[in-house]
Amino acid sequence: MSMIEFHDVQKYYGQFHALKDINLEIDEGETVVLIGPSGSGKSTLVRTVNGLESIQNGSLIVNNQDLSSPKTDVNRLRTDVGMVFQHFYLYANKTVLENVMLAPRIVSHIPEDENRQRALSLLKMVGLESKAANMPSQISGGQQQRVAIARSLAMRPKLLLFDEPTSALDPEMIDDVLQVIKKITSDSAMTSLIVTHEMGFAKEVANRVIFMDDGRVVEDDDKTEFFRQP
Ligand code: ADP
Ligand code: ADP
Picture 1 (cartoon, protein in one colour):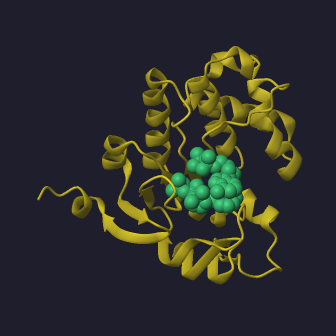
Picture 2 (cartoon, rainbow, N blue to C red; picture 1 turned 60 degrees about the horizontal axis):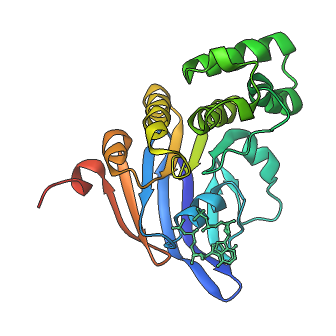
Picture 3 (cartoon, rainbow, N blue to C red; picture 1 turned 180 degrees about the vertical axis):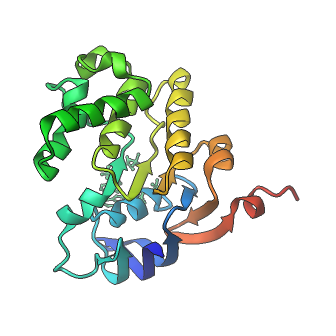
């Protein structure tokens, strides 16, 4: 079953052609890493998948919903599609625990106790149970990003998108965040699409690596192929 299908997709920012003839099919459960030079369209491609950027031509089907159709409800789509950004965008005036509990409370109306238990176990999974009562400003950037990851998992998404999740972090914090992402992608049947510059990490977690350049997909290989020595 495919989770994401791009068929001849074009994306323009005004006159600028940002995505060119994208054809891509990503199956349920795949962990795909997207790499390529700065400005090649990686972020744009990932952002089209949950409707943060619209496309102008072609079709884009995500979780059986057609994003090229104006009738598709992106808010509904996003309950199944989590996203982790370079900057964490935690709610600054809410505790770590509240940040994780917010979406399920508002969107799914699950019982408060169950929501709290789930949130605490997600915080435990990212190694931050002890920070549940802290405010985001009281924890490090790497810890904030792990909270953002826990928050993105709270809705139990089928698809998780990561847009350079470690690029804004101090070097010593990168590894903890990568370890968490590795755990998530190896533990579950979830599909992941990850933009990163961390090649070692890509080599460890990806079962497929897609290389972009100048708005195009220029390589699409399984890991063994991509990392094969010449
Ligand atoms: P990458 O993630 O590979 O660095 P991006 O998807 O961020 O690439 O950007 C691809 C190209 O599209 C770049 O040339 C960038 O300047 C341009 N771009 C990105 N967002 C916008 C925007 N909102 N308006 C105009 N141009 C944009
Ligand atoms: P990143 O590559 O880390 O995602 P950028 O600095 O490329 O960040 O982009 C940050 C924001 O600016 C994004 O929302 C992007 O859409 C927008 N942006 C990027 N390039 C342009 C551009 N040439 N014109 C207008 N907006 C842009």
